[in-house]
Image (cartoon, rainbow, N blue to C red; front, side):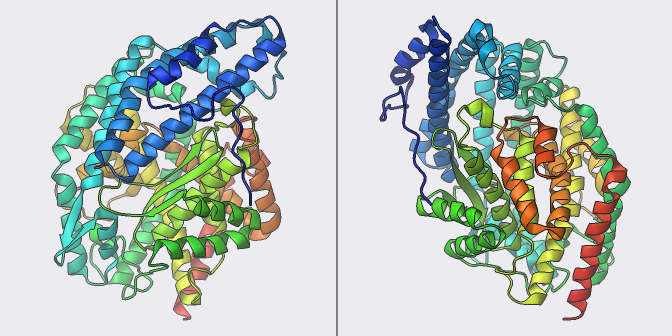
Length: 573
């Protein structure tokens, strides 16, 4: 597979984007260029796009390098410089350029269907932009950076060796319950040592974000952020419908899984350190790979079975060094795929340690990466900068299509166990998504709450969506949300996982019946970037975006049937 980097039409190939001085002359030209013809206007628009893409990619690399080692002073300074010096000026410039675009009479000559979402995005940006919010947004980003630094440096000592938290979490799969409890408490205390600061960070974020919303004319940050995220095709009522679905249908399935876990482990009561051990075979935790190279090579084989083009994409990323998958000290938490807007290439960041969950995360992030590849041909950044509910359909759909190949688990019994874990995870993630989403809605609609009220609300919502079949030690459930980085880094961006999971389940349902046709539709939908509305993109993939609970009854029946098949296979081993 050969990928060529786009040639810059206007910016010099080696423009150093490390400070505003290097950027300023080009910014000024964009500010002052006049148009006498539509051709002049279109040329200017292409230059604006080239400028956006180049700076976006430079910003991406500063973030990637920082998260790769949050303790490296040089990468930390570079990232801080971008946040504090360059980004505020870019916000001001972007507003000016978007205003010029919006007011231009030549805009009406652009193809309206192709520029529908482009125009909606620009109009939305102009409507909520306030210059006084720029320094507030900078402060929020620096707080988010501090949260990542805290989590990135956390470690625990086990048997005289130091482990990052993702590495230590493998011990929670141990068949020795006393061992699991010991490690669980070590991880909890590592997080708890910074609990006060994490709470303070969120307090500051809520105050700053609330002021940002007020400045923009919104009653609260929840409504502002809903608008800022560009949720043009749906409303908050869809979030509430999702919450109701979890209560109506999913919580019952979730409770059945917990009862099955408790009975399989022979326990009178489940504790939080009992949730990761494999109930199918607690004596032998699944270990699908040991090294990063093994994860990559086995992953490529899985993707080849789904579609050869997907395997080529991942292999190319491997060749150019765009896969950073294993956990190490100082690395920021979580995982992501970063779309590099100028080159049109993806970069995958993870904290793998050798678990089955790491395989799932890799499949998830590759789904995002395929999305980047499939839409890189679209000329304008705002035409391919698809919203999260579309992005997560790509990633979660890939997770489920990748369930079938047995590359990581040639033993049928182990494959059945992996299937059971993955299908169970689908059910267990729904209550968590609903909890995180409802929690953030409450927080930002009640910004003057106390920490005690925040803890109580989290427990109330957790119980609402999860039930009370797990016994949490005193003082631990109240702060469980500390581990959810989205609350700090990407506020309100979480319900998308739930909406996309519903789409992905439909995709899996179709894939089970017709793999080839389903994958082709999936790839086509991803190639649309953001040229269509969200429901239209879902429809192109062969699934529905809007749902009624009754529409999903057959899907949930399909899930339960798969669980029964897997359980039968396990008992027959």
